[in-house]
Image 1 (spheres, rainbow, N blue to C red):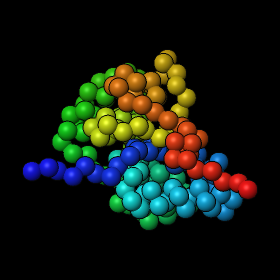
Image 2: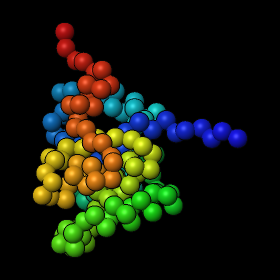
Image 3: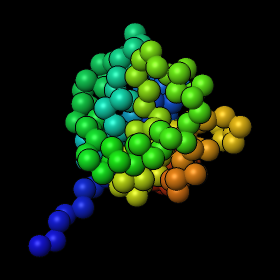
Length: 160
């Protein structure tokens, strides 16, 4: 029996969702949001449930958006949990303690991307001295792209 592969194409991090909202507000860039939301409707963009929890700590329109697109926020499967443990061990004790008081999506974002073999859409800068998604992702063979590269890879163009 052949199992169908999910339609997933990208894993998105909280940083990308926040920057999408801030740098490409829907009232100014409706085409970006129409295409982005369509990809979410088609389950081409996913995120672990922890991303939703991080967003819900805020108090803006993204909270309503994550409720509308609840289906993209997935519970990790057993394989992702195993990968998460491996990824989690890449972080320093100091970094783990810094995130101990609330939701922390980064290790699960990386685990999900590794499990499904997908790139991460994120907005953190790649600094090997910091424990950010690009540097930890690289340690685990996961590629990261920024929003503008995502738009380019999807062939999105908005203009006259």
